[in-house]
Image (cartoon, rainbow, N blue to C red; front, top):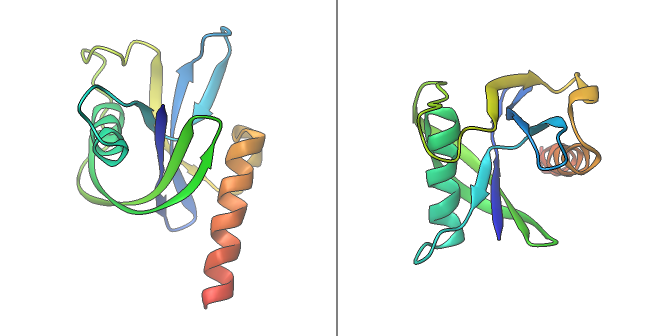
Length: 125
């Protein structure tokens, strides 16, 4: 199972640029695999810390699709820092706050998740 976090900061979302198994380079929400004896929420918190340097809290699960769980999360503390010495971070090129207007950087699924979240915020205002 793969877990990921969507974290907004104003008009930006936190993304990780990485190599994937197909050889492509893509922007993904930070996250990764669930380890033995770890809940999906614990794995998401750990993965975001390892990939971005931020400590987060999970707000809610927003999507479960094909073995991937996506959470909405909030930063508690930390600073943007990719530690390439952590095992599993070898595929990461950078972590960055991406402006929501840069739609070309988002996969179809990421655009869908972001659009659903933004529409949800609009309807609750």
